[in-house]
Image 1 (cartoon, helix red, strand yellow):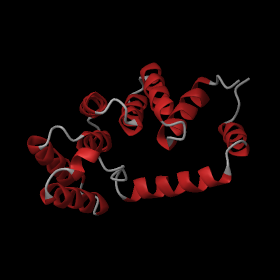
Image 2 (cartoon, rainbow, N blue to C red; image 1 turned 30 degrees about the vertical axis):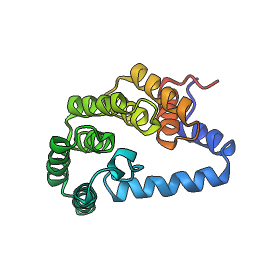
Image 3 (tube, rainbow, N blue to C red; image 1 turned 180 degrees about the vertical axis):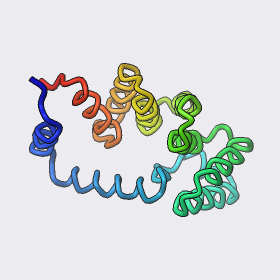
Length: 171
């Protein structure tokens, strides 16, 4: 018999430390408010000039204003000059998902994982894009890769939980 979503959520919450839940909720609020601009800074971005910082601020502003088209345009501009910055590829992936461009979102996330294979955010972003596009098995592998790198990666934990909940394979 299938468990209700509420039963699964209650079970997860009962076993989750309160400090993780508080941190996760804060992350989720920030992601929603900033159109997924809440990402860790890419170390390579810190090595570039002030133009990148200015560009990232403009992207965040566009996200805050709900101007997805402008945010995507700014991200693409940044990638033309700095294709090595995985942070921009991750941001592009989330933005393309919001715009409904699923194939482009997956490709952008794959590019981020190629650039920084040891970054849990890259793998989590790929998993999120794949799960959104109903590619559950591939999404599961991407989320698991993120969790190997960072067992507390909130996006990966949530995505993996949602995949298991939909498959009703909780054990």
